[in-house]
Length: 542
Image 1 (cartoon, rainbow, N blue to C red):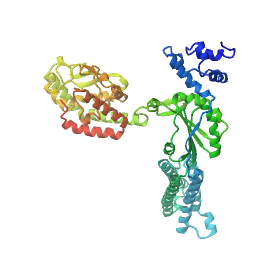
Image 2 (image 1 turned 60 degrees about the vertical axis):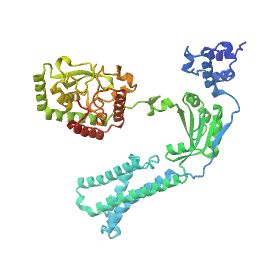
Image 3 (image 1 turned 90 degrees about the vertical axis):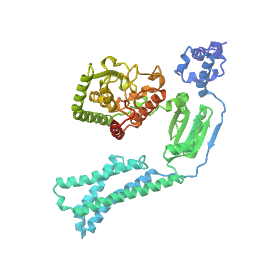
Image 4 (image 1 turned 135 degrees about the horizontal axis):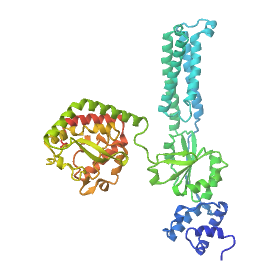
């Protein structure tokens, strides 16, 4: 019999398709009642609402959600507790670095002013313009370094970041001195020998200082020191190992202890470890489906002062997740990236326009001669137009010089062109062998339908062994993520001509995808140069 305080949980379990009697006798009934009382608006998992789920599956999903509220004495498994390193203050190293850099910039200015006889007495020292310039340079460099976050503790160990920002600040500082001197017409009052000696020596000194200080910091980290102490926790999942945390944090975080929790109620117990071991960062590893429950129970740790990261694991999602950010108030997961974007997209378009325009202008007499030869040899149009699949699967009309007899042209490519194909004219054999039949496609490039370099487009009805290309290679459509090209990475590797086997098709698609993944402006230039050599002699062209 159902007691008065049971209807809510019975109703909620009933939403899963479980009978009232089964819900009442479910092993997690008491925990569910307490959980729903605490969180009355708890949302059911979408799987609960599927009519195709079996009763066993419903109970499994109930078990998953009820695990968060089981009141049992579960053990906390301690996986690792060894740590011999010492804490390292990035702030101390950064402050020392900042002090040495500013001292070097101002100090070498004063030193070279004294070395070259810039001042001889105290009065000269106070009034010397070069001394004032040295002090101004140090102050201006300090302002720039603040604006560019040069001395951010998060970037001090990143050599590329620090070097790039340092050079920007340093060059901007000394360029500003020159601009001020020219603008105030006081450039002649400063010694050029002093200025260049100061600038070069200061640059070398600051670079050596950074190399030494950062080197000392890295050596301290490699000897077992740490910037942050970490606690690795696994909830219904194995915790991250100490080596992973060290590697992914650039060895700034060292794991003092790893815990495996068998129940979410044990989350409250890790606050003792955090307080006792002075933990700075907590990494909580869990399954993707358990992450909402873990996040909902983090209030158990709201009284501690430590950074807490929840790491939901899902193999299928992890392989396609590129970035996670906030979009307004919502979590945004960027799962697919454009192969070319921003300035790279602009550069590739400029490359297409410049190359296509130059080749059209240079080959215009040749195209006129080819058109004349085609008309003389056989009746029919000069150009052959065929619908092909292009960027993002969009269909476009590709232009070529007609190489077949007019009454034998195959606009749907139901039969692929073969060696010694009787449909090909004598002029057609020559222009196909030398790739001159492709010249009209540069007009497709100017129209933006194609690119000079990219995956070669195939006709809509192209088939191999009686099957469409998409049926033979399930990832075939990936090659449509970039504009089709006159030549491509597959073509310069000898994969040109008839697709008479599945292996050829698969290799061609693999090369196309490799090109998309590796794209750079230099790779395009390499393909163009190799294609120019193949125009002279290509055994796969017919």
